[in-house]
Length: 461
Ligand code: SAH
Image: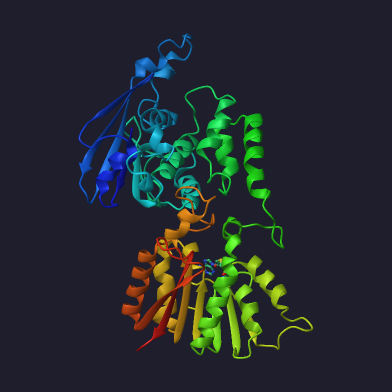
């Protein structure tokens, strides 16, 4: 079984400093059940790849275990070949400092999200591809899986080659793998006791508490021992719940993180001012959520009509209440319309809007679905003005409680740096006949920019 970790961060060979393992050598770590070899099949400034290869001694595995019972089963199984809790042990033994996010020679790099790709094979995944996605995608990884034959040679849906790609701190990647590989395998090789709770909480710090599948992760990681799982969950939950709850009793981590700068209010005010300055009259708020921007715009006399579109009926219900639609004292009929719909399909109900806005929406879409959205908005509806905002990932290092590689919100599929956002927007403008300008939202840091970024597209053709 092997784990490969590659980066294209330049110079990529800095991976050696992050792992505390020189790219020119093969590093061997002795383990009670075999050995781990770490080496670099590629070490160039443009791309560097480290491989952790586990050689498990099947005889050593069962030697000294005492009981003669089940000996055949102990020899004839997938344990020597499959990625499992053995891999987690090997990680701790060989790259512990990197897992802690410490690099003596490159401390800044250890703290920075960088482009990473990890590949693990063969990975036994109880629950298959859907489970793999459920575990890794909320953490912001792009997941790719391919089937691999099992130890008997036959193709088996149980074994996968998993490729994760994304931008994160190396320590975040290692901790995600450390916890989630045994969770996928669902079969620990050692007795699980109370110290496992502490390990889980330590390696899950900063991401497990906000993970939508946290119960399943905790249950499986702790080998389905209910009392341990209860302990772990009790210690995970208060972290989140102790924060001040919003009006609906719901706190998003994003709101908590960004609260000190009241970022969302600034964002909405900036977008509203931009719309006014550009002469927008009929505005489509795409992914309007609970209607915060709509309610701000509803008060403005320069606004003629508003259309809100969202895929979530729950959010639309909230928006309807917030905007007092159809209630006495609410807006005149037809001034505001809420539509249930998906932004990745053409929708003529908002075709007459002269401006479309996407406030903190694109990062909620799977990157593979983004081209459909851009086609609908810029290729088909083609409003005169389009305003898009999204978090600036460069700024994330400045949120004191946001841990390595984590996103501000559990539902974010990606968070882009300024360079990534600008490249995406420039390509769209070029392809669809728009001009694009960029602006910062929130306080600007000299090195990392502002917490949020905005692109304003004006149609030229
Ligand atoms: N613009 C709002 C909400 C942002 S949250 C605000 O700034 O407060 C992102 C919103 O996009 C969510 O309400 C979600 O339901 C919606 N959304 C995400 N993907 C969507 C899609 N493909 N089609 C329609 N709505 C979508």
